[in-house]
Each structure stands twice: as C-alpha cells, then as structure tokens.
Length: 272
Length: 153
Ligand SMILES: Cc1cc2nc3c(=O)[nH]c(=O)nc-3n(C[C@H](O)[C@H](O)[C@H](O)COP(=O)(O)OP(=O)(O)OC[C@H]3O[C@@H](n4cnc5c(N)ncnc54)[C@H](O)[C@@H]3O)c2cc1C
Ligand code: FES
Ligand code: FES
Image (cartoon, rainbow over all chains, first blue to last red; front, side, top):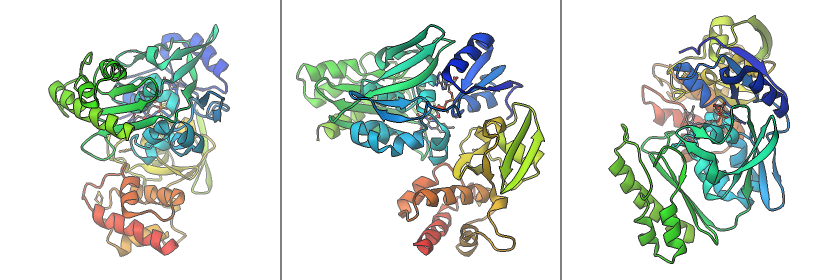
C-alpha cells in the first residue's frame, strides 16, 4: 500500500533535525533507515504529515574507539555494525546480533539508532545494548544528555526520547566477557518468537526479547547468578517480572517455557 | 517534488508526490516494470534493486531518500542481447518457474556475490533469506547462484 500524503524534508545535521522537530511538533517523524517506519506508514498505522529524513546526514554513522567504550553513530546501518572489526573485537555480541536482524537487504538500510528509537520488544539490537550495559546519547533543544539503556525503554514502543530529541550515538562499553545470543524463530528472516542475550562479566547481565511490552532485562536471573545460584536455578526464574504476549506464534506460557530453555542455553554458552 | 537519479546508467528526472516509494517511482513514473511488487509487508524481496551497488527492498524506501543515487534494476543487468552471468545461470539451472521472484532474486544474488564472492551453499541460502519464491524453486535458485560463484573463482 501507499503511505498517506506527507511533506518530505531532509536535514544535514542533528541540530537541524532538532529544529525541524521543534517546528513541526507532533506531526513530524524522523526517518533513518525507514525499515520500521515505512512498513507502518504503508499500513497507515503511522501517518506522519512531515518526514524529516536524517538518513544521509554526515557524521552520525561512524563507529569509533572512545577509550572506555565504543561510540556507534545512530545512523550506523546494521550491515556496517555487523562487519565492524572494532565491534567484532571489543563488543562482539553487538556485531553478531546485527548479523541476525532480518535479511541482508534489511541490514543494508536499517540503523542502530532507529532500532533503539523504535523500541520494539521483538527487536534484537536493543537486547544486545541492554546486555552490554550500553547507553544512548540524545540531543535536544537544551543540549545533550546520556540515558542508560536500562532506563531507556519505558513502555510499548515508547522510549525516553522526547519528541524534540534525536539519538545521535549509542555507547557500548568494551567487553571481553563471555556472551551468547539465542534467537528462536521458525522461519528464515523472521523476528524472534523469544530471544535472549547474555553477557557474563563481573556483573552478569541477561536480556529478553519479546517477553514483555519493551526490551527488558531478566532481573531475577541476574540476581540469582550474582547470589551464586546454579545456571539451571537462575534460568528457572526467567519469567519473573515478564508479561509475554500471546499471538499467532505462541501463547504466553509457551513463550515462558522458551525463555527458561533459552536463558539456560545462553548462560551455558556464555560461560563456556 | 522533483526527483533526479541515475537508473541503469541513465539520468532520470520526474516530478512526484513526496510519499512516492522507490518501487513506484521506478515502475509508474519511469516505466521500468521489471521490478515487481509481491507483498505489503517488506518480506518478499520481489522489489529488490541495487542502491549504490547494495541490495535494497525498493518498496521500503522513499524515492526522495535516494535522490542523486545510482540505482540498478533488472533492466540494467543484461548487456544488450547478452544476459548477465547471473541471468544466464538462472536460465541454465532452471532457476525460475513463473518468474515473479526472479528479478529480485537476481538483484539479491548479485549483491550477495559482490560482498562474498565465493559463498558456501548455506551462505547463499542465508544471503537470499529476504527473497521468497512462491513457486518454492529454492533448490535451483541456490544452484544457479553457486554456479556463478564457482565460475567466478
Ligand atoms: C522485513 C523486515 C524484517 C525485519 N526483521 C527484524 C529482525 O529480525 N530483528 C530486528 O530487530 N529488526 C528487524 N527489522 C527492523 C529493522 O531492524 C529496522 O531497521 C529497525 O527496527 C529500525 O531502524 P530504521 O533505521 O529503519 O528506523 P526508521 O524506520 O527510520 O525509524 C523507526 C523509528 O525510530 C525513529 N528514529 C529513527 N532514527 C532516530 C534517531 N536517530 N533519533 C530518534 N528517533 C529516531 C523514527 O522516527 C521512527 O519512529 C525488520 C524490518 C523489516 C522491514
Ligand atoms: S514488495 Fe518489497 S518486499 Fe515484497
Ligand atoms: S519462480 Fe515463481 S515465484 Fe519464484
């Protein structure tokens, strides 16, 4: 189908994007890769009157070593994240997860910033950023602020990003800890029915895909591991605090079962 | 808005609505109907073209977003009467049945080989994950792609 009528504007800097968002208000939407937004627009589930295209803006797609962390520009496409030697060496979970998103053509367009901003509980990259303890840099009319990924996802398709803010960067702490990513789906290219990302550093972090309204951490599992529980004991707590959806792919109980199984597999693999 | 781009080496310009998707720009405004539309959900890959050499689903890009870019569609693959090696391989290996998915398959497969010139069978299958064949002719599609890959190395 065809999106509703819209006005297209292209901006060439984060400051210009913020100015456009301030000018057009509610009616405007930023567009990065467009691979979440255009599908919604084609179904008229979204009908922004103004599209502010940031996809070709310079300076926001670099991946660089910033000392303690790797700085990934919000406009870095999945394909670039997947093939980044810096990320493969310093935060391999993120590069690996990027390679599991959708299919190659989707990865040529979609961006890390767009994936974070969309905040879909079924998406892969937010889970990786959560498990790695990353943070999101937002630029708005009053300047810049940094929000931990832990505080970023606030509800179904809702994030801490204000209407007049743009994500400019995602910060990923360097990590040499054991990690694992488990994505369960039944058909090639599909979204995860349930997924798990785990990073077993000093402070173990485990995140869940499609187990609640937003990308989330498995806090009970993490606390059990920190308290010395076995992996099997910790994994048995995978559904604590979750609210898994029921849909054509499975009901909440089935998802709960998958979460326990895949959390245990993730812990075993990450520890291995 | 006025949208200029280079398609198959030729400069085009058309005045279209801002909401125009690339696939509709190509088909309805430039008359390049080799690129198909097979779904509403960005899943099937029938609409795959190259933007600056990389495979992209043209139903999931606004034409405005690729102003000035270099686009290749299936019409740009053959050299006059001489088929592109990938097209020839699909013909030789019976890689098409009804042919609906074929333009997208050829574009996805050539993009795959430009990134990974000598893929394994598994890598070809994963590389074509975003392209569905409703005739389910995957076996011969994979064979076609592997025959070009082998031929290249
Ligand atoms: C067929 C298909 C399969 C897919 N499969 C998967 C999958 O398996 N796993 C997965 O995780 N994802 C999947 N995706 C989604 C894909 O990863 C998207 O690219 C991603 O979710 C959104 O990134 P984008 O750059 O395309 O964002 P856009 O669609 O451009 O934007 C999405 C939202 O984020 C906002 N936004 C974008 N950039 C910024 C920014 N810098 N600052 C503030 N707001 C911003 C936009 O306003 C919009 O609301 C799939 C998509 C398709 C079409
Ligand atoms: S028509 Fe573009 S993916 Fe199906
Ligand atoms: S040959 Fe018929 S859809 Fe693939």
